Length: 69
Image (cartoon, rainbow, N blue to C red; front, side, top):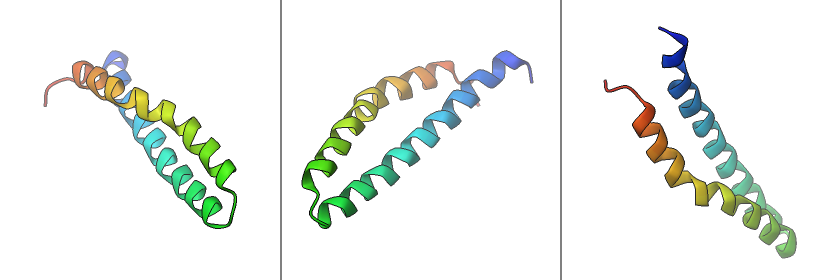
């Protein structure tokens, strides 16, 4: 497999990792909020908004880059 073919697969895996980290951090923010730190939880969720805002663009771009199966 040429190196140029690896780039879409690499980006796909990095995106999967990013989404898994987003889910884990969201769980932690819920846990923090349940223990009385609503301000901290809200700040964390605000930071996670960037991942959510970019998710659709990343998915569409990866779909264009991935070779057909």
